[in-house]
Length: 129
Image (cartoon, rainbow, N blue to C red; front, side, top):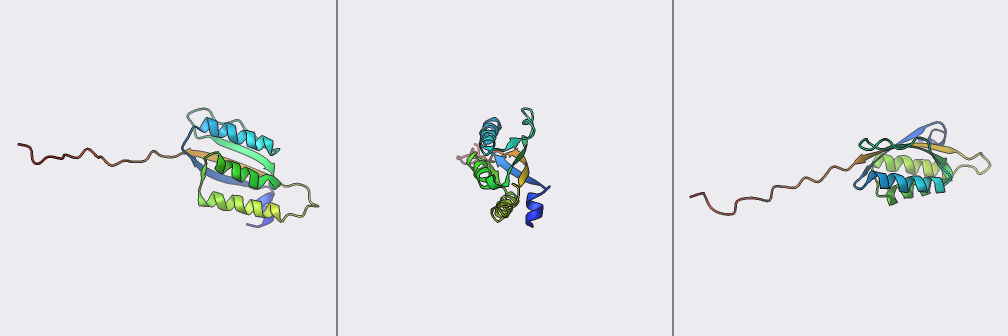
């Protein structure tokens, strides 16, 4: 991914899996984004649907946002890690004389499936008599 595509006019699609309350994750993440002078462009989806946040922030804060995603308990897939790393590297090597690049991210959060447990109630006795 080249720096022009990573920082100009492209929406980064980030998929994450969570295993705790989506409302708590959204609250913590929104607070961090606002602290990094970013914007949550659309309110979170209604309860019972897959939470999707559309975010914008200065690319210079990419590392802080990346860390916040992980700190909030979101599990990112390989492609999401690669996209965020590429965006951070592009922002890091950007000339300081240029105007600040704005990064747009669509964060889709999916509930982690419950683990499947084997049936442990096996008969312990011999054949029925």
